[in-house]
Image (cartoon, rainbow, N blue to C red):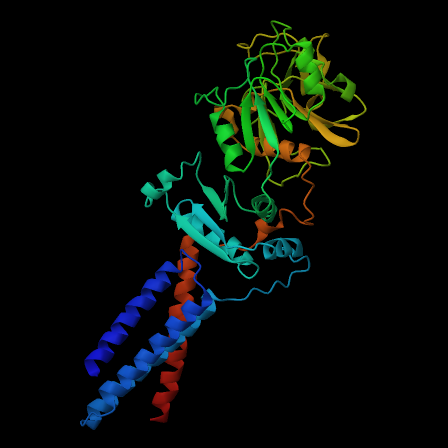
Length: 482
């Protein structure tokens, strides 16, 4: 009986320690944690009665009993503190409820009929903040979280074929979505909506006119863009002719003009058009004016902006911090980098997304020496502010999004700032994804989070310092009684 009790406590202790370690990486069900903790304490009691209940030496029995009681009390305190730490309840007492998810997110989470698996791929030191955020959803859905360190779990991470790290992989039933940016409540809501109701609409990436090549992996190619779109659940196909099965056309960086028949098809289909300046030729005149009836003309010039290019060191490389379009989702930390972009001439039915700075900080030029750093305003230039990107509707519905450059979508640029999010916002707007009804879309950036070192110190205080404090106080009064 004694030997069995010793082995029982030993194995239960190892199991408890093992579960404690793994629970920092996985969210285990509460029933498992509670059951193992109860078994661990019961094992201690069994060992106590087996070893010390029938001892003949009363003095040794008394001393061993005190030591064991102390160990038992510390173990119970440790287990209780651990269970409290792992199953803590959050009470948000702030006036605007900024440290909890909104009712919209809770309702969206509760609609999920199957478990959601989230795989975090990032250095271990960044896990704590992601765990803190995802724990807000544990009470609203069946959530499993797995964390992989690219250095430690190199084999597993390489099999995922990710285009960038860190990344978050969402698996729900047979659907998978990949997020290549930090988590926020707004982004989580968009992921949940898309993963529960995958889009069946076909997006056609047009080829045959010198457009960005989605099969090319060079710096001027666009294979990263195609992969990210498909990772996000969009059904993207490359086509050389437009047809009626296309819900949305992507015309990105064409170099050759289109025929009249092709231009007529483009007019009648939802389109994202990104066209680069071609100062030495006017071969794209038809395409630059194809959306004139909707109020958007693309000039054949280049915007220079001394104000918005401070961080880039190049007057033709503009860094945009926010958008001015009322229907595009805004983010407090959004930054977009567009280089060598044409200006747009807008009619009354078009709405700008971005504008350059005002004159004399910015203007658009029709000719300049790209090797020269001294670009001066001339009478033929157009004073800023100039429109960089715009949208237009047709019959009251989203119809086109136009950019004066396609370079921001190349492999060399797509991973910079939030360029990819800019394209996603355009696609979602055209496909009819309405603005999410979250009153504070970015408020969860303010949720208290800790890094790995702070988390270790917190665990040390909860599981060691606090129980030790109560033990010292208890021992003091015990000695006074003696």
